[in-house]
Amino acid sequence: MNADPSWRRDVPRHPVPGPHNEQVDTESPTLPCLLDQPGIVLTSSGRAAILLGLESLALEPGQRVLVPSYHCPTMVSPVLALGHAHGFYPIDADGRPSLEWLETNAPTDTRVLCVAHFFGLPLDLSDLRAWCQRRNVLMLEDCAHAMFGQSAAAPVGGLGDVVIASLPKFFAAQEGGVLLVRQPLRPISSLHSVSWRRQIKAILDGAEISARYDRLGHWKIWAEPMLKLKRALRGKTPTQVVTTTQVTQFDPAGEYARIDVQECRRAPTRVAKRMATSATRGRVITARQRHYRAMAQALANRAGMHPLFPDLPEQSVPYVFPLWVDEPDKIYQALRTVGVPVSRWDWLWPGVPEMDGDHGKAWSHHVLQLHCHQDMTDQDRNWLIDVLLSYCKS
Image (tube, rainbow, N blue to C red):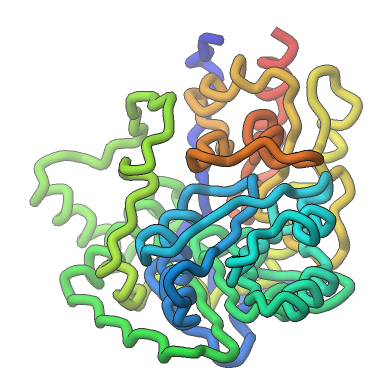
């Protein structure tokens, strides 16, 4: 389907840096946040947190890491970078690992089970935790989509032997991950410090994004002269729209899956830490919940689509709004072309088998992840809904 350029809108795909992130919070945060867990380590990225966490478990040769059939390739690449065996397990309709399949089909060499809170909706992992304990399996709790929230059993990150998360998915940090290892069998690697050049570049990159979306505020005093100098040195103004060649097939050796082990051993920049740790959380929580519920209401009972999880639990803060679309290939690229902040995990790691009762492969094709972060305005959200419905009708 061809995109109509007249529909284009410059909606931020991710939270936007700026002083507004640190303003006095008018909404009191009432949900657990992973950043408050004792013993966390901030890393350069979520995939770095996975790699460092697996290293700390001191796996023996031949021991296997199981990941869900529905996954981002960055969940698999750290496993292979460390030379470990990997495998896949099916997920149920609610995104939980299929306990029935694990009971009868989990390989005997399984040592780590990676379990994810997809879309920011916390899962009750108590029965999975019990299964892991019976089988002498360690649980890696992937909270990349769930920085906040609580299930019936525990806060997010409350049950994993290893817990990881991603800063940019919830805060205006351009990089960063979170790692918690409750009983490391090997000390977590010391992280290399960041050079001053990289620190300055991170500050300017964030300011440039802030300026693009008119969120500099009182940062203008220092940011505008520095950005003007930066543009003069590179001889051009910042590009507003970046177009890339569409890649239709996943390459395990390509840029998307590649992992730089040395980069994983680097600390995050200071500005990334600050953007995450000083953000007013009430604004993050309430805006994301508001956008999710508005999308659920607007997209319910529509032909050719349905909200995957129409009811947002009170104790959750979404990363994205998952929407099932019957024929996603017809609209996905068109939506991205006009600026709709949408993602799809259609690139699964090669070798995911067909498994009875698995919903993961179907999700990877049909589920669109509509972004719903705190720096989207209500007007941005309503435009997103209108464009989506227009394309689906046509």
